[in-house]
Length: 441
Image 1 (cartoon, rainbow, N blue to C red):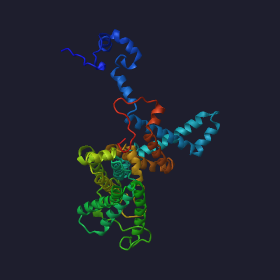
Image 2 (image 1 turned 90 degrees about the vertical axis):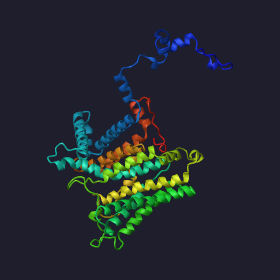
Image 3 (image 1 turned 180 degrees about the vertical axis):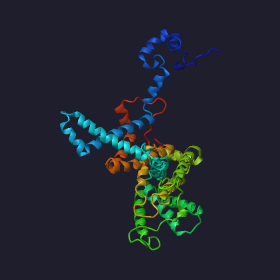
Image 4 (image 1 turned 90 degrees about the horizontal axis):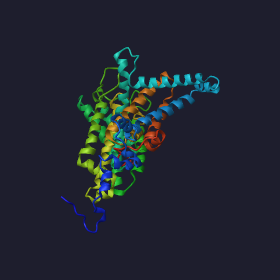
């Protein structure tokens, strides 16, 4: 069928024979000038070359992997300059450079070897318990970080910055502990009620900034920061009250949670890994399903992308903001409950939740605020914490340096342009790096 050009539309004129020949796939002679001018029209590369090119493209996996490498390199430099004995060998580097290089290698290799042995596997283990101990410690540290990371990530996807995961985790651990030693319930039911109480505590603490944001427009960052302080001092006050404080102690510590409310262990003593890691995996799957498969998840992402457009489309932004913070608070509360229902502690103390809420922000950023990415980031942070303890004991590396290593990883992950510039990465073909936190990176 012959196509006739529409009158008055010169851009709809059919291409001439010469132009058609230049763009034809099989006409190499006429396509030669275009191929020399445009490198993308060269001979089709092999499958191996395409694999290497895509591997070195600026995709998410490559940037994340190279960020870890950069963090380890900078961490190695910090180890060297913080060790006086190794640093002294550089005073005569030009005379005997091997002394400085050997001392540096010995220090760094020993440190990272102990990091691996303390978090993944110890090749020198002689018993099954010793072989499983590293991964058990990693899972113990990972479980609560998954929940607080998901809490921050879920709020990010809805366009909110949940700084209050720390306070929500504190309220979760308070209610979980109170149920754990005040309510005489049978085993099984006792654990279930304690876990739900932790979720309710966090949800209530998330509801407050959510409703303030929705009804009055009050900024969630300010509200959640203030609620963090309230939760901290409320915990400090509550511990020393009659009926809560351990009657056999004079310091600030509560009664112990009953054994019937404790999460079951995955291994025998002295391994500490407990069923909280299973709950963390289930929570990750649930959040992924909520965001990607449910109507509420679509509304949540729409509000996070553009609240005005979502409101025009008939989505209740007020209701969505409240639900986002309630769900985020419940997740953080579950993370806090892990600290007293698991094996980390069995009683309330002023520092019972440590910094898992603030660490959850780093985990969410490292996981690019996507559920399974958050779970993997939490696993990495759990490994760094577990291996950091062994680094401190066996390699004399301060635990603060491990925290610096975590911060370096997040810095490089959060600055993909810097990583691309250092390694001269090409632009990714299939997927571009997104930098908006609210849109999920």
